[in-house]
Image (cartoon, rainbow, N blue to C red):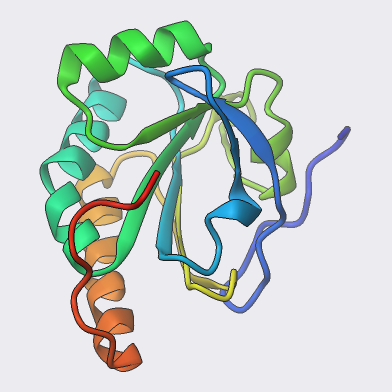
Length: 170
């Protein structure tokens, strides 16, 4: 897709996509909608200080996300191979997806910083595929994780569903 999409807002349905994970597996978003709440975060680059801190924070909180019925997915334009090295090096417990040409980033309307650098935006998506949170900040890395987890817990409580047993089925 050429051009940039309108930034997704709370209440929007998320566009579907298929990207490769750090294991080389094709991951289609539509296959995950309806099973769990999703936390999808776009980040600039593997192994940079802010991105490493954010990924490690999501990984450290991963059990809390899964217990609240959510899964975490990180997306950047880095290659599958870079994601694999990044995940292994930092013991990341969640899926990283490669968006090499930035097509998905553009479809979600993730803003660029200074018009050049890929932005950092986190979305919480409910089981119906509707955006419930958009948080965009290049520097407030911890707030991406804490804000997403707080909303995931609220969604879990509001659904009346019991806490999820274990990690997602994929």
